[in-house]
Amino acid sequence: GESVGLHLPTLSVQEGDNSIINCAYSNSASDYFIWYKQESGKGPQFIIDIRSNMDKRQGQRVTVLLNKTVKHLSLQIAATQPGDSAVYFCAENSGGGADGLTFGKGTHLIIQP
Amino acid sequence: DTGVSQDPRHKITKRGQNVTFRCDPISEHNRLYWYRQTLGQGPEFLTYFQNEAQLEKSRLLSDRFSAERPKGSFSTLEIQRTEQGDSAMYLCASSFSSLYEQYFGPGTRLTVT
Image 1 (cartoon, rainbow over the protein chains, first blue to last red):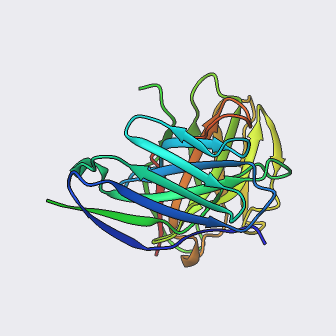
Image 2 (cartoon, rainbow over the protein chains, first blue to last red):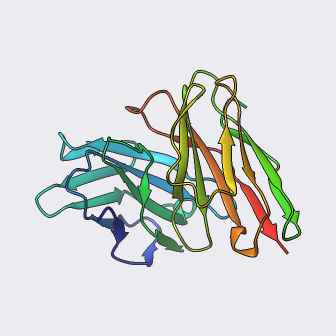
Image 3 (cartoon, each protein chain N blue to C red):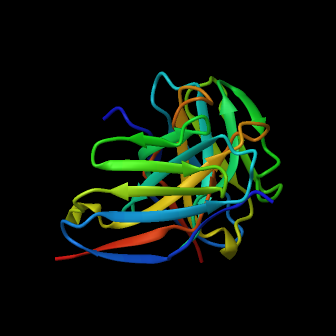
């Protein structure tokens, strides 16, 4: 079925270290993937997206990697800062029919001083 | 502020009452989406519009839920005869088209007592 999941519910990292948040998806027809950041009491904030014809995309301090062979997505955050503390969701879209995003449960990133 | 806005931000209602939420998308965006998010979960897709046309509504949770976008600009989500299980955050998102990222509003938190 269509589902997107995350491997870890909580990830704790030291300030200044790099963070890697992982995501597994099951719908092989998915062709668009997005990472969102959600702070408490706020709506999800777009971070970066990637289409299935790519395997890597870089933004400011963030990199998304897509491995279609094993249906795995990851978000790398360089030099993690206190403001990066939030819940991170990956989401996918198969492009057909509903066109709504399918979200996983999220990973809570905690930054240790 | 040119982002997605939602009103009200919080709504407390008694079981059995009807509620209506409003979403104003980013002005040049022709697609508008509604999601529901319960505590500890990722957003769950409900329905979406392209301009004034509702292109997907099979994901609405029951026939008590309905949405409109009469002039292709703002949208409303109505829940009739609310139940305690309807308590959640209701999120609106908009995008320029299906090929572009969805931007979320701050959400309306509904509490049904």
